[in-house]
Image (cartoon, rainbow, N blue to C red; front, side, top):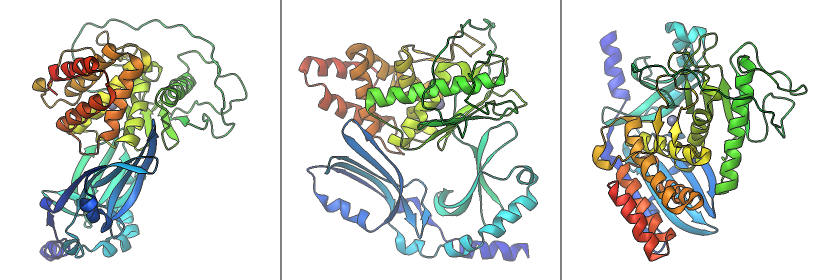
Length: 451
Ligand SMILES: [Zn+2]
């Protein structure tokens, strides 16, 4: 019986090589001929945003209604003028016709039931989402079930299953602030003083929310009404909820004011993640930020550290402008932009200063790293990106510095790597630094970093 199943599985799952992907790069002025191929594929809307006077539209390819992982079509336009189109799509449509997509989709509720019955963790907590994707697996793409779930510690995972409940891949997803443990002398906690502020435009329900965001808590003690003053001492679990709301709202307002950029969705956040356990969770994934209380060993008061909270909010911005991934070189680009905009916003180059217990801070955007120092470490390599952006900001001032960074980000795509970042950073300097002396200065700064 088992053998029969395997043979059936191979017969049903036809595979196609990665070489069936096609990359499209178009800039205004060049021939529209290579855009024709985009007209032949189905795409679904992912996000739309505007930055300065540019409109940024990001879409993903669909095959018979199912998203194809790793594909994208990004259109940048200025008013009604198309400025650039960058695409990465699958063009082997005839081969993909053999995918038993309707059979998979018709089987969805059955699959969900079997998932619950055979894996105890899904009995305790239902998965957050179950969806079908056409995924890369061992050099080929094929339909797989994507199951997103949160474990008991508040960590979000994504597992891939075939139709026979066999796990094909499992990975921790999202962007985390914390990472490796180290032995150092503890320095003790940093002193802060409570200050009275006004939170404006709050909804009565849901709580705690306004037009930009909503902050909830996993603690049984949470803010249930905004009719009374939200005055809690910093040890009260409700304090984290109010504090995170304050930092996040302020951060989103900063992006609106400084870049004219508004994230195109309601940002969600949750504090005291993993309660009653005190976890070091601090990450962003699919429109939602999750923050633990901190274990008081490595981190303490994560939701009370502006750099931690703002950093996670920048991931929402990066997500809607460039859709960068959370691992590999693209992941380091993502983290580099998150640290840079956090440092620029808080006027402090150090990340984790108020919460990290194993040293004065966790990371800094002040460094001398260059591309030659790249070692594959997510946050190590992100320092090259945040470092060069910070140098530009120091040279040209805050307003110009964040403009150079944001316009570079606007040109990046979900599979951008360091090389693509360098090419686009050069192009942005060319178009933004009109004074010849400034341009030379800018180019010297980025060349010193290996771009
Ligand atoms: Zn991050």
